[in-house]
Image (tube, rainbow, N blue to C red):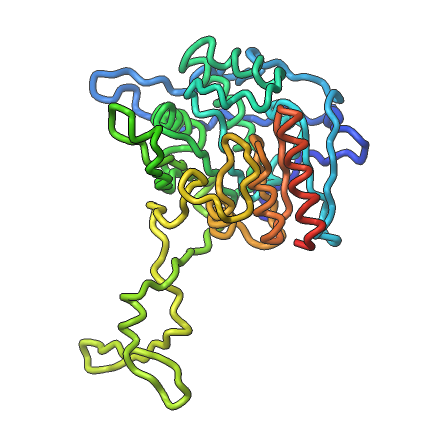
Length: 366
């Protein structure tokens, strides 16, 4: 942990999440990205939408003193590490109870601002009422709701931490502008395009270009961050280039330098082509549903998407958080990859599904 990552408070040992130590003040977050006063002839706000220079979002979303929601600790898999946490409650209030500079990686798959009815998970009225409030004021209301939470996520990240925000075309461009203000344009590391196109009859009947991808925005907290380059599988064309065989039966190829030097590269040592920002090798459940992981959750994402993100932006033993955990894909992937995790959702049904999924992993010895 670097000098920048001094924790300002600690978890409690109680059965519920409680109010933090009174001496802890709200984290100061005034150093937003300083964008120009105007882009061409268009004036631009300095602060994120809805943010007060001094009170931040506490005037819109006052601090709620807990306890009012139970925090389940799931400690299997990491006997020498702090217990993992599965929390039911509004993620804004939950995050305000967590210590600063304590999380290595955050992935969120928040509502897409699509207005689709799948946002109401299995008739969970608590979730329905919350989404109704978000959509009532249109896009500005949605962005203010998101900004308050993104600001807390920045506080929670370690200086080497990263955040991935998964959205689609409905709100991705608006969210990008707000995240530039919160995290800083210089901390924007890339835009990942996950190709999840399917040839379903429903999509084929649409009188428009068929939407075939989601977008994942990738930011870091500082310029010093964790990143482990990922590589794809070797394709047949690449394998054919290893056209030589040594006495032990190992395939290899030879690279010749301009100076006449040569370098031998063995097939079994090749890592494959580095993964780019366009992911076409992970199908959606609409296309392929034979992995055994599909649980029927309406907004469920494949574990391979989360595994790639977790492998690239965290190391074993690091803390991974998902504050819109839904069906628990992030927690399941983090558990399998030997990371600690924090999972939260406002839907009691989602939390129950996540708990059942994790208990199933425990029974399988993952």
